[in-house]
Image (cartoon, rainbow, N blue to C red; front, side, top):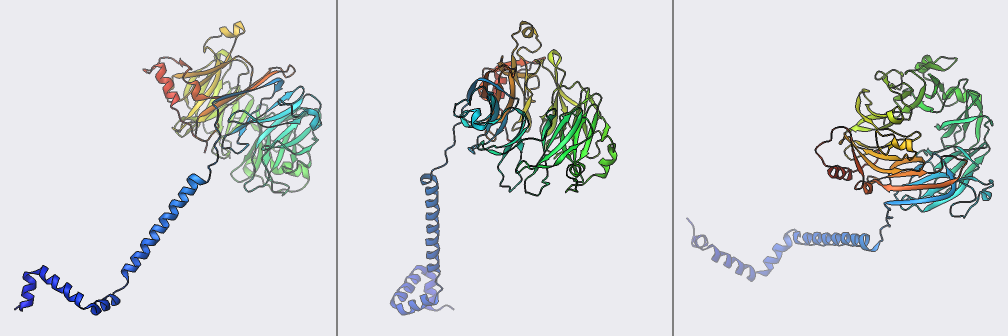
Length: 552
């Protein structure tokens, strides 16, 4: 049974709690003993609270400093359109686009020949030891067209290559290699325009330079990839090796013992052997880099041969039978495959070749291809090749699935002789926007008959397969053209270089940049066949909403 105290506590619990509180107050020493015997939980909590608020204060302070005290780098405003003119000049079919001044906007490098001095009259040909007229290199800001640098670089230029990459970790600055006329060999710093090295070339006066300039692995062990220049004299192709660091010639001239044409590829087989692959008439020719190095230096080099390739090509002539009917016109590596496969274009057919066995990936596709094809994506993430079948009023633009050779789309787009090359830009939907030049009125030749023909720039996107958008038309002679993303994953723009058609008759040379999106509202919609339900304005709106992405 419960005693009286327990029974009272059970009946009156609150009253019992009051009694315990009074007992505790009346016995402070016992209370203190209890506190001393309890772990210091409250002190630990206070320390944690102080640490939390201190770290929060530090974080807020850092955010404040970064956001308001330290100034953010200024992002230059990129103008939507600009134009730069050069008077009494001629220009070359060359445009290089890269971020020269490191402002995160790509810039433009081009060449022109002026009769007296540079466009800003700050330098003359005599300053660099050339007679007038001479060739100037000019770097223009992609943001506003202002001149970044400009200087005389050669008396005249036969060939220029600015896509020579630096090896990873190399301290060598990016450069442009210029082969001049008469024989000179010059490297120009791409960022500053300063001459890195200059030599008189060893080419014969009667030799013609074959393109492109090839970068080969470092053969002189100076840490910089070296250069291979191929020349042709009296139907004989020769190779010349040069140091990429100082331009010194490595060994002597090495004759390949065959004729050939421009369009060389440095191909790496799956065994790691390097071969020079090039068209020679209606055949395909090949020389091992190992054999060429041994011929020009007389010693063994850091290269090897591929037994399969050695058996495929004739030992004496270095030829193999053409894989397409007609003369071989173009050889191209397939993008994204590290040169695994080769796209071969003949005058009457084109075909995709396996990069190791040189066998057909698909049967040759008959086509009269007279201009260099381009690559892009007609279907999402599916590579296609675009070829121009014929020229003039009968030109057909064919989109071929690169994996099968099937025709995905055919466009009839008449063109003028000597029109600019086509190009493409990747879009955010993993397709590509394609840019073609053609007559101002597709299907009509009245302009050519009256002598008032104009080049028109047309835009095509696979999501609107029955529509072309005419963005602009130009009546002056177009020397070079490119469609560019000046800033990564932002708006597309095009750059066009115009100038006199005759290099002996100086005139107005212009470099023009236009933002594509700004041209869409005033563009002309060209329907191909039966039109869809969308109005012309709805079509323009869809082109305006296109988003672009940078190359991977």
